[in-house]
Image (tube, rainbow, N blue to C red; front, top):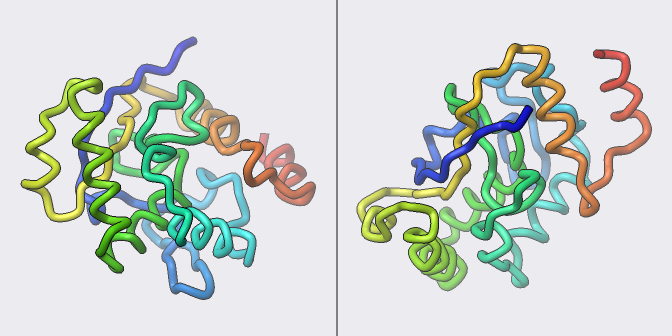
Amino acid sequence: GEIKTRFELAESDSLVASHIDNVDQLTPNDKYPAGLQPRSRETMESVTQIQQISGSNFRPRSIVEADVLGKSGEPVVGLDNLVESGNVRILALRRIYKEGGKKLDSYKAEMKAWARTYGLDPAKVDSMKEPILIRRRMSDLSPETRIIFTQHANVSDFAAMRSSELAMNDARL
């Protein structure tokens, strides 16, 4: 069936990403269930992807504009604050918050510009420490269905899974 979500502004530090960003490498987050992240994020490809998203060509609209499949746009987050789709986007946004400057200003401006469209108060962006626009998954999913959902949401044209990742996911099912 259809998975219901709602738009929400969440504090960056309340969201549990699958990995910790150590700038030149990613390490698994102990607070994140290993089976929920279908991608091998310990690769340089993931670090490069974060650099591309948060780098000089940062396009805040690509993280704020809705994507019905959850493969781009706002990260999709469960009721328990686990990031189900968009872990790299969360890590890239955390880098932007750390750096500050024009990229951060443009991200906040983009969130404010879209807030009313999503039923949110634009003023809330300024009242928060590090707001991130997310889509909160409201549908209740069994653990097995949640894993399937994250697998489907994490297949993208931008960063296709390597054959070894696909094989590992197939073996889990």
